[in-house]
Length: 306
Image (cartoon, rainbow, N blue to C red):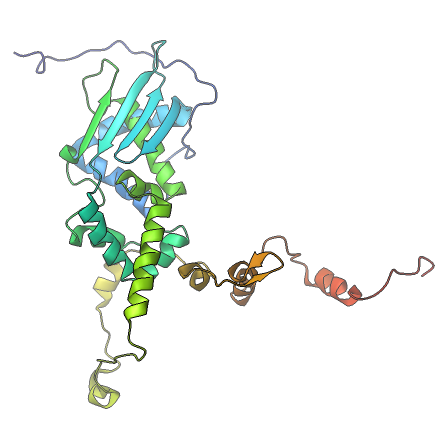
């Protein structure tokens, strides 16, 4: 029997308490609120890591992670265990090559909604299929797509220190979906700049008239009111998150118009929010007080005797 087949027994131990560690915000239930962060955890659990990931959940919630850093292809952290010296954790994924990113960027630039949602801080659900169609899956497909290591004596992979790091990573994905892409080798600024460049090039080459290829209405009146997709397939589609009111403003670079030291997009954003029934930040929600303030505009100081 080799040493890998022998049962391994460890004395129960408690981690040393940490002050100011990186804590998971979710105190109970599943960690990861957005679909992309949940997708990351679900993929890991599909590899048969469910029980091992659960051991790190309490570590993540207790704040045992001392520091956490994400860079292209790597996530590194130091996790405080039961021993005085923290353990060094590393999770590695293979970044996309330049050619692979070129294909992905061209596919994303061809869909204005993808770029608009990314600018709004959202990850469109269809982006996973875009990566798959380009031959570069966004999330790991098998345990071989991830390389995990920890300096602790536990032979299991992932150990509780690696699992805790995965949970914190999922919450970082919640906060910023661009981190999912940055981990695969393309940061937010570089990706958006490339998408703007590709979009501008396509716009310059576009014809001034719209080429309508759909059949005339008179030729499709018999099935005009027929559903384009069955209810079963419609229910199976993932729920699309609501878009922000100023989505159109985020899709394009603001025009070179400055009013009172603000660009035009910044000035128009509150108007877009009001049109959808929202309340611009900093504006008084009480219409009576706003009306009173409006009535007093242009009037001089009030006489204190009145």
